[in-house]
Amino acid sequence: MQREILTGSTDSRRVFNWHPFGLRNGQELHLSIPREGCRTYISTSGGFDVATFMGSTSTVERDGVGGIKAGLPLANGDSLKSVDSDSSIPSDNMPRTAMPNYEGLRTLRIIPSFQYHQLDRRLLQRVLQQPYSVSPNSNRMGVRLQASLESEPVNTHSLISEGIVCGAVQLPPDGNPIVMLSDHQTLGGYPKLGVVAFRDLSVAAQLRPGDAVRLRLTNLPLERLKQRAFYRYFNL
Image (cartoon, rainbow, N blue to C red):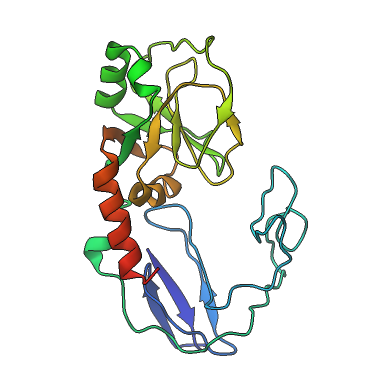
């Protein structure tokens, strides 16, 4: 994805995802319609001066909390003030090999949960082999996947609702998986295949309606190694 910085009436330059850059007073950042992915994240080294709710400055429209207007999204004319911070700009760019791929058929790797082993083998085989497309009903609460073929119904009557985490993959009665995102509910009563691996969560968050998706199994030790390598790169 590219974004454009306007430095004057005729002078401009383009910036790319995963690349740090500086803005001077009077410069404008223009966000065009992305060619791949669906969300753009903008951060400053000191963060934005926004009141916190339960320790977070995020906006949750569904619950009407957070942000600068009690849960309402930003609109034209709104102002965001950044916290005083170090004005130096990191010079290192993210290597392309470490950037998520937002094009073509996306793969979401899943670490199986204990409920995975309680599901019917035929159901699991079908879920992991067939391609999906992203439903228009997806949002920040979760990505809803639609199978190209009719999905097999899932029995959910014997489960008790339990705590749920970001990245959890639920199987509702219609058999079409739902991947929980940042605004997910705190409890879930559907069977869970597992949890999307840390490095694939950013891919799930960028899925748009109609995007092609497939699910694949992975394992916890391997994904821990990937996550630690990611943290080391950013000195986290």
